Structures are given as C-alpha cells and as structure tokens.
Image (cartoon, rainbow, N blue to C red; front, side, top):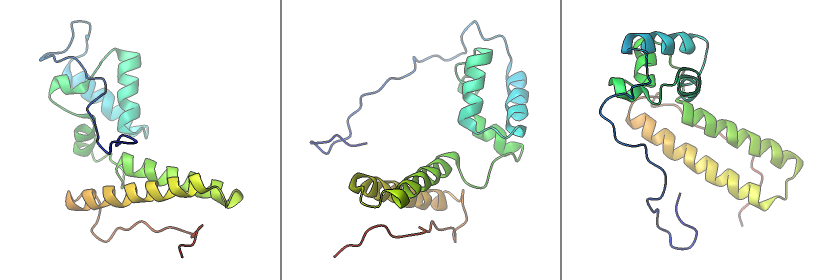
Length: 150
C-alpha cells in the first residue's frame, strides 16, 4: 500500500535470507514434501495454510528451496479451486463489510473500505483474466448500493 502523505510505495518490509539450498535441519526430500502438499491439498487447505503447516509442523521454511511452489504442485494434481486464494479472500472481506453496513448504514469509513476492497477485486480480476486463471466472462457483482453519489 502507498504511504499516507507522500503517495509513494516504499520498500520497507522483512525479507528472507538468501540461500541456494535448504537449511540442514530439513530432513524431508522433494518427493516427501510433494506428497505432503498433495495430502494437505486433498483435505481442502489453501496454499497459504499448507505453507503454514509445513513451516510449523515439519520445519520446512519454504518449498521454493526445492525448485517448486505449492500452487504449481496443486495445479499438477488438479487440486486448485475455481478462484485464486487472494481473490477469494478479498470477496470474503467485502462480504463481511457489506454485512456490517446492513446494520450500520451510516458508517462512512466502512463505506470507504468497501469501495477500496471492491476496487482491489476489480484490479485483481483484471490481472487474473489476463493470465487466464479465471474465465474472461467472470465478473464481480455487488449486491446492494449503500451510498449515493450526488
């Protein structure tokens, strides 16, 4: 996100240390990791949840050390869902804000937050249509209008 007053994006944030090979404490090989990712994917987990389980329970900091990604593995096994995870979470967030606005229709910060979230959904869907991850005819539709512009 942009900075509040300067309208610039900045580069702050943490980065992982550069390593060419996995750390010495990782005792699983690439095939074992792939099997575990497929197993967790069949349970219905999203890629971010799978990454958390691998990190917390198995001590694997990143699957990318093994020249693969979780989404690529799930794509190979046809375990991906219709919509990408980030787009689904944004739609869910917009629905939560919309439910809040049904009870609190004059909450102007929530109205602004809904506008921003729906804008992100439109931008992200445009990107995924270009990358052919979602169908060309897919569109996001809002249910109600909570505010009127003069």
